Image (cartoon, rainbow, N blue to C red; front, side, top):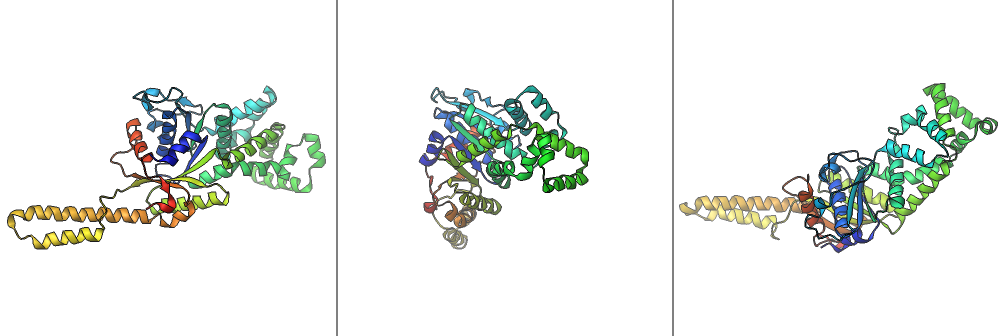
Length: 389
């Protein structure tokens, strides 16, 4: 069993799975959470990506913004998992999360109504670029602080949006410290008295684009949030500390596709810039190697068979064997080429454990298929990248 990945799901509190789309990231996230539950931990897998794939993989019709506990008989059919093991899943709903924060942290019901009824709030709470990443940050905080979970596995959206998620706490604190934002948060009289020319010019410019009524909605929205901004700041700082702390691990998921490897390399470099190391690299859908003979040797065998066997009775068998050797050579070439794709990124993740998951015969759509992937993910061979071949 891959000791490093086993350690992650057995000891870490948060595992963030990252990678480009179409590499099996959601499947890997589910596999890690299932393994955590099977080892006796209260685990939850949360997807920020709005795709329905996670629900289907876990045998559910749909997921909601509230964690749904998975029937134990599905993930522990033999009844061997420790009694404390539990598995839950949820899919981030940006607007529901935002509405819940407003209701939870507002000073009174009137403030809740002012915010939820504000037209600007209704337009940004589910659709504004960046809102999803902010709410994902808040959901992670909620699950960690209040959910009672021992293992939180985060299935992030494709790479570029995942970077937005990781950067959301810093960007939010920068916004809250912005001079114009602080001016907009001032009570009306103080605002009129103190607002400088820069703020007034900003509002005049924006009003020409979106209209004075829209500006009134924006100003009213920020005023309605008065008193809540410090809570947002405190939680953002806490999430920053969580992501950078020893409790969190980053697992990079990729496949042998050139674009997927390029995205994984890019993501690893961005994590390194933030001093966030990649703890594990999972390479999914790799064609297996059949033996150790090189393609050149296999093709030489095929050529020899094609030219030396003149017995008519054995001719048909020789032809079939020649074709098999040629096919095997093709497989070995594909396998070597796929592994060669990763040579350039090994320096980026040299301390990460690398696990190869083979290209499987069927897609992952139920717990049986999920368990098959899990057997490969947690099989032996999770060696550091500098030693991976």
